[in-house]
Image (cartoon, rainbow, N blue to C red; front, side):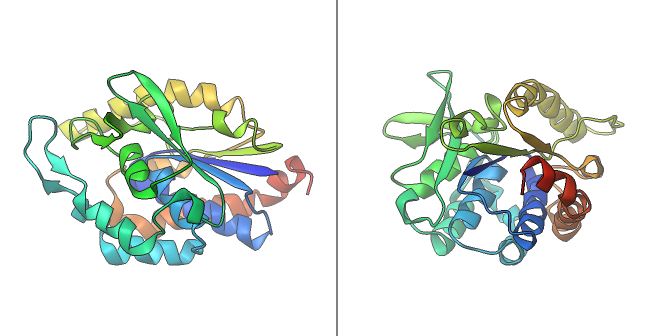
Length: 250
């Protein structure tokens, strides 16, 4: 049994599709998937049976930037209505309808803990996992308010431990060194540094950790560079597939 954990990372999460494509080409198939934020979105589509190339086409065609629609409430500035529409138009309604078991991580903001969804309604769980604090209104499920899963667990390896013999964790947020030129840079860099600690803890629990260093070139908002980000994940994984296959004992 192989489990794959997909991290959050905004537009950089598109690199997960390249990783999955390289795995598909080498007959490395996950038996269970977990994901946070962008990783939950990618994981949802893949678990529903979409090929990585087709998921990329949907991301480009639907223009995910359209989710930034002003809501102007006291809880947040933006609404996730557009993303919800995309999910409803392309994914089945429940976790049970997926072809591959999926686990989605979200943060219970009032309880201060991570919640893992794997049953029932799919759309709200993915929206909750992707709900960036302050920018978006919290997503309410069963009277509990949720925000982005990456706040407490950006690489949800833990729920795979009892479900898979081998765990592959896939990150998309290399820290490196980056020059800060704007307020947006400060926000994004601060977020990366904050979530890096919980990612470091989680990746130690996996058998393989994949994270292309070249992703440092991209911003989490670089949706216009979707194909380039996809290719970065694909080429890195393809070039190192022999190493990964050996570690997986394939």
